[in-house]
Length: 190
Image (cartoon, rainbow, N blue to C red):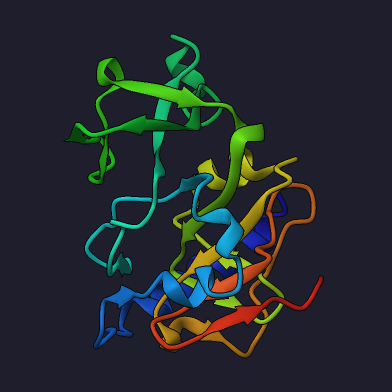
């Protein structure tokens, strides 16, 4: 990854840390009013960390899937590449090493990527092109690489930026739509 992009993103994360959101939830009906055919499909959601948007009501969704980070190798020297994210169906959760709720591995069933019709992706910020500023670990970018379903970024409206977020073309993945607490935006293709 280009080190100048890494530095720009790090600086932007520090800048955004001071921005506190007033409301903390998004209404998924803003999305499903436009895509009603997807309500009976596997939907990739997330359990929010303290600075991420929550979802108002999930009761109408039949098939919910949650991110699960798994180690693919016991090689501890390459910690970054030895972990991958998948989506699983589960009703039982535990606090992960990274501090967010994730499904309990033994009580969950992996959903194949091709069966995931839409994935809601948390972000520290998004821009009008669909660029995402995440936490810098690359889990969502690796999962969404080659993904053909709908990618929806989720953030507070104050973190939907009208300036570009730096992106690494070989690594970072653009969102198709951005859902905020106020609106659903169609991202302008990069």
